[in-house]
Image 1: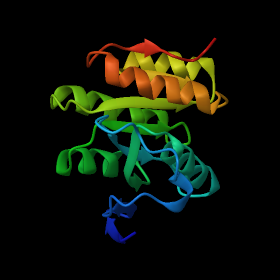
Image 2 (image 1 turned 90 degrees about the vertical axis):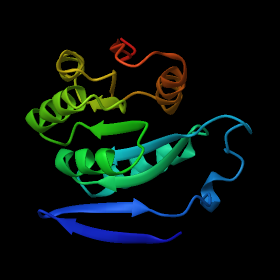
Image 3 (image 1 turned 180 degrees about the vertical axis):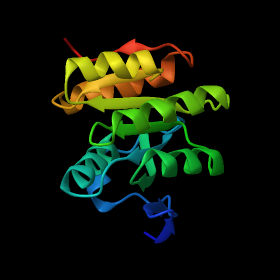
Length: 165
């Protein structure tokens, strides 16, 4: 896999250039003819980010095309590439997430957003800010997979509380 690092405004952006599946994804490829969701992960770099990326890559309908360290970088990537889904981790400041979600709507970008929240209150605030879906961080991989599958079926703009509560 070929990666390159771009430094913009102090934020790290990792863009995956290869469509070749990683060895750990063998046996989890999507059914032929099923579109993969080109996905960007927005999360503070570290163990949690790496774990979340590995989890997303294990889902058969997801292709992680990049990892960014903040909402500004996520917005730049959404504008520059065809991104179907942005997964935003709750370790980013809520104010930045709200501004990001507002920008997606104001610019008419059709990218879906999934916010992973630490609390039920954060789930409600993310949905109120315009997230397409919100899920608690302590959800199972199966619940995450179900949410991603719903993005294939739902129409854009349908906010969904998928917190599992």
